[in-house]
Image (cartoon, rainbow, N blue to C red; front, side, top):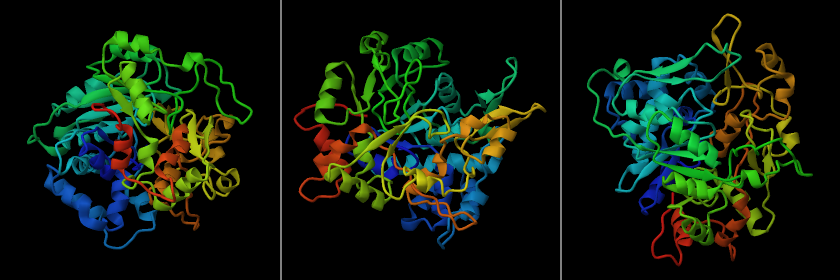
Length: 469
């Protein structure tokens, strides 16, 4: 559910109610640093950090990032560098600690299970994010937005504190050349490392073909699948075949994009259905199809415990109650090249004229692509950065058309707007699944808020036993 929307508070509420609460691991290092710089209201991050197994590292992170005064969002941009294929030890340690704390807080106070969701497309921080989550005792790792065939083996090695490598996709590289990110826990933290467990791995897929390929070619054990259809929020898999658009400009999905559940049943691993399944009827259908449960995003994204900024929740739910909520599947907005769902809200970058006011720049860099420079080293480019910069780095000008800076916009969604030196303050870009309008169930009779427990009780209503992820 985007950056910090499915945060530890929401995951904790879901997990303590006997379901699988999942935190988003995307960009946690910058979220963690900025919240420390904003004073860590309530002291939750510092409490979690006090349990980090490497106290000297925790003290250094606090000395670098904790502040009692509110930041403008500028400081985080300078104190947390963008990830590269060879990041500094300080950046690795910060990312590991951030993921540890998020999982620790999600697991605190109950005996339920917790998962973390990461994107294969956002490769560079993934080794340190996974290791931090493992140190925190995470039970499940969920990963999609690409082909995560290396992740099962990576989890095996990280759970042994072994030096671990991950192949990095580098554009324009010669075929015989490979690039790898490396994480060596012992080099970072010494030989006295805590005993940890290997979490189960659930691959997020949109087709049985990808699922079968992962089963055959992954370098370790896959424990199940989340089957995500095109109605899910955030990034969607592109339609199979040639891209066609509706009159409104949205991608057209056809029969080839409908997952073949017979094939999934033949694979024999547990699976969950996702994408417009967040209703009692959706859960019943999923169980009848052989699923062990459903993955639910949109209903939780707008509940009280989610990290979404309050005014954006209220604005969205007001539109839902008026029957005016609209979600547009933008085929080109995301720098990843994947279609991305956007809630049409006044004053956000869903309005083109609002986005055109923004100076093009790339500051957080999570969606940058790696490419090989002429001298053989790795460079980084993003189609949402200034067009001239992107072209100088070997990108094609047409690749910049319609691209939006999702990194900065998604930070605004959770109250962490970056303020530029020019005084420009970033605007939000809210994502949700096509089921947004169905939240009318929760906002009847003038009610404009609801809790995670309300969602769980609604989904399980009328069913003596059910499973949900």
